[in-house]
Image (tube, rainbow, N blue to C red; front, side, top):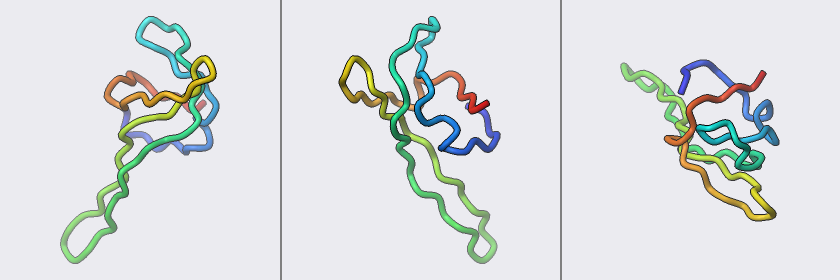
Length: 74
């Protein structure tokens, strides 16, 4: 995934597509591991996205972030 900053509210409710471009569902939630602020001589660590919750055919499904090729909040 790109290292560019993308705001969560910009991707909420956007379609989640598979590798072939078919819609899996719509993003409902983003699952992240909290980051860590800079302390002493250590650099800050940004939160890490581990997955997404999407609505697909009236069900909520988890999609691992490793399966996402691109995120575009435009």
